[in-house]
Length: 170
Image (cartoon, rainbow, N blue to C red; front, side, top):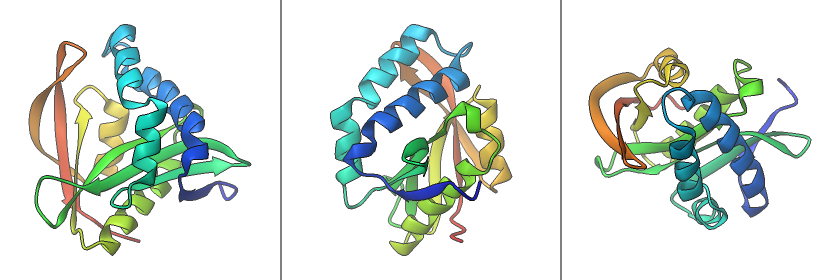
């Protein structure tokens, strides 16, 4: 994995982020959400303008993992509504063909460092309750479920696990 570079994203990375999002969402959520729901959320959250806006925000850290210019994963984090010392992990996805290689950990490390540098001490985020791969990853990183909430995704109500824990910036 030494050939993988994690760096700040820029607008040129939008197509790669969209590709990884599509592959990651289908791998993580098929059988949990309908294909129509997955596509609706991808269209809403991962359109070109939305990603570009997030990449360009100064209060959000948006990072990609790449090899030879190909985006293999991405992660973003920034301020939350939970207090001045709590940051929010907006998203983290890795191409399913590269799961288990440590790319997600490197991306999460980068988001944690970005947030710690800005004074955040804790990280909070949500994961669909049936996303066993994601939940297992976050537990292995020391985050714990602090509550379960319901979310509406394209007219379907699904349970989400709210994770929180201290930022352990590397």
